[in-house]
Structures are given as structure tokens and as C-alpha cells.
Image (cartoon, rainbow, N blue to C red; front, side, top):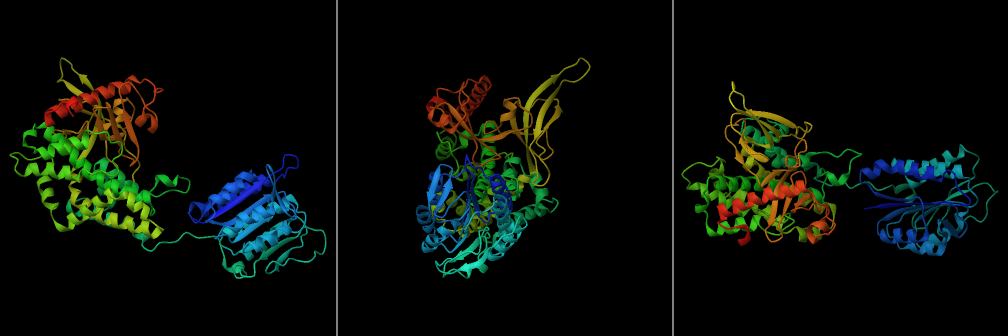
Length: 587
């Protein structure tokens, strides 16, 4: 990305009082343009020789503008650790192929112009004598303010001079030289700014402006296919025909990654946490949204097979897929998919004597064999498996946009087909109180969190209560048909609420990534992120990736997490014995 390198240096013995203000206000003038990703700003308020060399070399191909403000002389810039010679500075800047403009906002810098122009720097702003600190600051702030508005170099320069004139008389050169020729003399000793340019660059004075982010053709198509799928689901299942109405009905694990794709970044928010523009992060979030749909379907089928003791109907191949999917040492599922396992489990219900809790499963398995959906699934599966190569092949923003639109189109077909999930909801059961009185029927008061949220309505993931004559399972995630509390399917330990286990308010939903019997640790993925992993080991709370995967002797003992590990391990042991007919030691 085009880069503006703005550097400043002050003196311990001869301070420039307004230099800090110049640094701050120039940065402020450029902030909105930088936030819009028009260019990158690298600003160094305490430049030394080592940092100058490193910054220029690190951004050599991208620097389009270089500013120095501070004390200077005819052939030197005075940096925080000493003088930088013009020959070295010109050599560094001369290797920057995108560089268009150098501003030397210090005293008597005109002597450095010739060497810069010889090194093919197109345009230089410099001074031929001493410059008052206040005037130099005012000039710089106004100059960059006008550039940020989209003005040309000439226009911004002239308005900068006009601003500086308010603080005293200035004799300046608007355009005084071509080639490497310089003014032969000045008329007096008053401050003199000059705008100098190489003989091949005169057109740039009126045509070059600060870069503007490329408006990619097709970028306005982002989310359109997903919106169409959501509206189609609304019509099919008689919901209010708006994307938000459908999102509110989808289970949280499917809802959340889609909501992330729609969320628009505010100016003050971190860009890495948003996915509303074409980027590799957005591409991965689309793939994560697809995996979320497949994962929830797979975990539901696994939970029902376990509950109804249907393991005898599973083939050896399916049992192998289950073991490989759940019991491994994997700590990253970004390149993994449960589609094959989901399909194998779903086929079991075609000949089953009783209907599945997921009543649409037989229909779904038939749909998976249709060409249009099969093509979409094959596309997404290949994209998941081929992420490393695809990332290396990206050479332009247009490549990223193309990948995003391709993945989004395929995902929209999958989302529409799996739209039946609007008939289901998830609830976190955190804990239960028993109420038994002589004159009343025994009742159970459940502290719960209903896991439903749209992309416009603020988060409603808050604690609630539910009273019933029979208890649900404690610290569990229950899948229900919309509005039907009489029947539910416990999805734990495949889905868990971390906050239920650590006795915290609201909910923090995670799904099982893997359990390693050999290493005796779990990896859970946070539903709201395609990158956050929560590891759980007995008696240890590991706080970093290095701790997690390479071990650490400094980990803190945390009995809450230890107890939770025991609970989850017992659940996994029960599942393994019931469904796989193996103890954990045999896996």
C-alpha cells in the first residue's frame, strides 16, 4: 500500500517548541484518509539515523512521500542521535521507485535539493535560509491538510505559504527550478521556501495527489448473495422477509459468523476485527460460516446417535471418521471439514425406524446429491483444503475480491439449503435450583441463556430463568425446536458454554475442536471467532499458544478449570465407550 513516511527530530539543547504540535496535527489531518485505507502513514516523532535507514528500506517500494521536520543545514538533517548526511539520505530515497515528493521542513535545506533531484526524486520542497519554528509548523500543517482534501502539490504548497504568511512576511519561490538547477541568489535574508522539481516531473505538480483506495469493481456485491439466501429462507419458512428476521431465528453458532460478515466497522474500531471489505480475513470468515453450518448439523447427529444408542447401525468407516474428527491432537481446524462425517451420519436415518430429532435430515441428504448444491459444496471444500496455496497466489486486491465473491456465492446455496435451522434454537443451561414445598409440586428453576441474536439488534446474550417440573442437564447446551421446551437434545460436550462452567454471567459459546487422550487436553474454538482457541488441561490454566502447544512449567493452578476438565473428560469417555466401543486409552 502507498506509504507516507513522516519523520521529526528535535534537539535536547535547542528545542523546537512547536514540533510536537506539528507532528500531532499533521497526523490528525491525515487520519480519516488513512482510516479509509487510502494509504499507510508511518510517523516517527523521534527520528534517529538507524530508524531512518530501517524505515526507508522496509518500505522502499511503497513510499510515495517523505517529510522531515526539525533542525537542518545545507547538507545535513539533524536527527535525535546526530547529523544525517545528505548523500546517505539521497541514496536511500533514490531507491524508492514510487516516491513523488520530499519535504525538508527545516532551515536552509535548499543545498540538499540538487542531489535529491539527481537521484530521480521528482519533487522537493526545501528552504534557502533560516525558518521560524512557528511558521514552519503552520506551513506543514496547512500543506498536509490541503493534500488530505485531494489538492495537488502546487495547490497545497501555495495554501501552506499563505497560512505561514499570517505569522510574518515571507519571500518564497512558487516554482523556481527545473532539472537540477537552483536559484542563483535570494533577494534578502528572510525565510525562503522553494518548490523544486526534476525536468521530467513538471506535470506532477498539478496532477499528483495523495493516493485514493482503488474502488474495486464488484465490491458493492459483497453480502448480496447471502442476503438473497436469507430472504429465500424467510419466504420458504414464512418468516418476515428481511435478512435480520432470519438471522434472529438461526441458532447462534450459524448466526454469529454471518453477522460478522454484515457488521460495518466504525472509524474508531480496529479493522482486523471486521470483515465488511474484501480481504483475506473476510474470505476465511465465509469459510468459517460454512463450517459452522456443517459442524452444528454434525454435532446434532452425533448427540442423537449417542442418546438413542444407535451406534450398532454405524459402519466401520463412519466410526473411523468420528474418531478422526474428535479425538486427535489438532489445534487448528481452519483447513478441516466435517462434511464427509455429516453425510455418513445423515444416511443412517434413511432406513431408521424412528424419525430423527433433526426431522429434515433425510430430505437434506437427498439435496446434497443434487448438482447445484454438490458443486457449491465441492467449491467450498476445495477452498478450505487449498487455503495456503490460494493465499500465496494473491497478487492484487482484485484477486481477494474474486475469492470472496466466489466463496460467498457457494455459501449462499449451502445456507439456503440448510435454512431449516430457523426452526431450531440453542439454550445454555447454566445451573439449576430445586424448589420443593409440602403444598406445591416440585419444580426446577433453571438459569439459562437463550442464544439468539440478529445483526442489527444489540446483543441479547443475557441470563434468564426457566421453571419446569423436570430438570434439564446442568452446564449443557440444549437444542430445541422453536418454542418447544418439552423436548430437547443435549449437545455437550460438542458445544459448551465456558461462562456456565466458570460461573460467569451471560454466555461464551465454544465448540469442540479436538480432545487428545495421549496429551490429556481439550481444544475448544470460540464460536464468535474463527481464530480463538480455548485449551483445557488438568490443573493448569495455560495462557498462551506457546504454553498450550509446547508446555510450560510456569502455568498457574486453577481448580475451576481442572474440575471442568474432569467433567468434559468423563463426558468424552462415556461417548467413546458408548458410540465407538473404546475406552479413551484405546484411542
